[in-house]
Image (cartoon, rainbow, N blue to C red; front, side, top):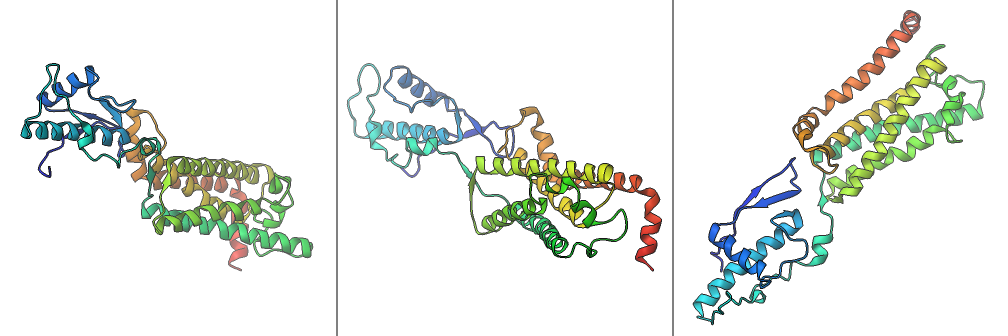
Length: 308
């Protein structure tokens, strides 16, 4: 039994994690399987085809192995052969480990350690910025006339941004959203380092959350630059933490086929995932250039106040 060889699988995939696999059987074995399948003597699980899912692949390989083993047993024991074909008993094989419940479960994935550290580091950066803003907000409420630690001049001031309606878009201070939101990637990162595995929907939910945070950051940055005309240092630190969380997680899920994209885009997703920093740096560079150009006349006075 131990020397029985399984049919070789020829992978056909659109990304690093193949979802579909096509099998090529030896010609004689393929004829045997086909004849039994057509005569309803080989009862395959529902939905099993020549192109199978990753879970159904295991069932298919076990069925073929059972068939070849049963043929060998039948020949060795010189059992009777019916005229319509071999009357095989697939119960001779132990396939108790393959159940319908297993084929219905969605596979789990363990994120790379590098992704876990990225979630932890940038989650901490964003959380620290949000927590600092919460402390500054409390200080403003207690001492309305005092200047804050992040108030440098007229156009770099946390206090001026806190006084705007954009700073509490949901009816409460935005930093509270950051304190709760940035804790999520930190916890997930440590869970992955501890060996946790999550299903695909969990990572998709992460991408959706980071995507909403990314859009919120873009909106806040445009409001701060063009509407309020004031920059908040702690707010910009939170932007710096959000942008890489979004790009790295999105490109990783696309390259791993957790979020399915067009097959023809698979090479690009693999390339982009390996160069996620380019997308992060490009986004932050565009924001920095917009800030530099928009506040061009104010920079000399700002640098003068810093060095005097």
